[in-house]
Length: 399
Image (cartoon, rainbow, N blue to C red):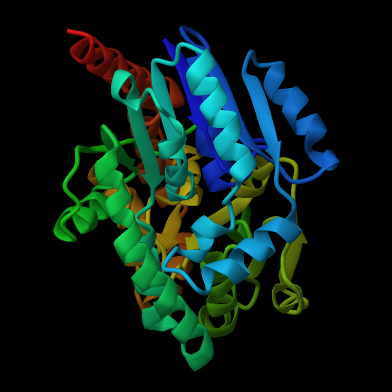
């Protein structure tokens, strides 16, 4: 198949959720297919990222979109009903580029990655002769709904609700596509209840099982890890919530406990959490090593949507996880038993202390969990199923 992937960000380096997913899907699809990615180039510092993708056999074309252009798009969007996150990626140059590709190349499958790319379906004059799929990954309206519920600042809450209302209406654009892919049953059911009438399929987040191997190492018995892309507000909120509301309770039971906040670009408020037993590392080259030397991984998210890679990665490595219901809601149901769920500070702290005191949890339960991940959520298995689905749908189209 000739597959065209339209994605708003260069999927390299694959260190964050949306980049990680499209990187692995594109890389695996190149085994049996011709794959081209079309995306935006923000600045020349990203040219090395393009070269790294090309080395994998992925053809990639870019359209320049400056931050000044995106800011202007936001200003214009104030006077429209377009979601601001969609407006941020508006580009006449991208529409022209895609129109040329669809006109001059024989594309079998056009894969639009994230809701921000859906606006470019109309650039395709041959869309009735191809399979056009949209991958929302998460239900953005669900994320915004949960965000608004926990936000206390009235001004921020006001703007979240405006974006939520716009996204609620805009998500209907999925009905123009052959298939809508979403990463979890929770997100799928939410969109179905909203009345989105299209073919909705699950496309799970996966794991690089060669990298995230359950290696036996000596871990630090009092080490707690929180990981995430820190500019992402759900992670930012969760890190502060854990450090201020949960960690002090843990210290009452275990004065030797240490918290490591690991993730790229921590804002000042996160950096300010640093003290004698709280360490803010910023970006690390080897996240696997950070997990493995920790006694427990925490995911105290208070809002969000989709499936959290940080939970999948931790289970795959055999590191116990304590998480909120929201953090685990997007997991496949067969993984629920490998996560300790807590929804208030006292309960969360008790689970963390229990895991630190009981090494058998890591030695027995988490070994089983790691095996389940390897059997069900490897990128090879996920992309094989995705590819087979596309092949079948393409055959049906051409009957």
